Length: 147
Image (tube, rainbow, N blue to C red; front, side, top):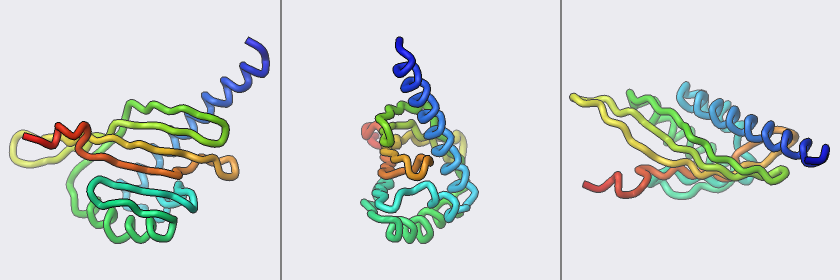
């Protein structure tokens, strides 16, 4: 392996770690209802599709959606969630990834969980990774939603 190849490999690994950290921090802010802080992780031309709510485009429309819909949903739930199993590929200042999403739903015995999937595209903006596309499919796979 040449020095250039090694430098490229290290840069890709550092970028993957930065993307994972950014995604976790985004989820922390959402869970803590710090919506404005979470929105800082979106590129200006962000495209968001969350479950059955349809597609929102651009920072202004996405901000309104998160403040009016997502905030209300998170505040009204007594559910916890987490992501895991990220698969991320980096190509320069662009990256793609998918994550598993798990949401615990309390209720009468037993507590149940919902599984979903994040499909994301990322862009490096002023040396910081941001979402350019964020899609949450729930349930995933689709047959989890059927009886």
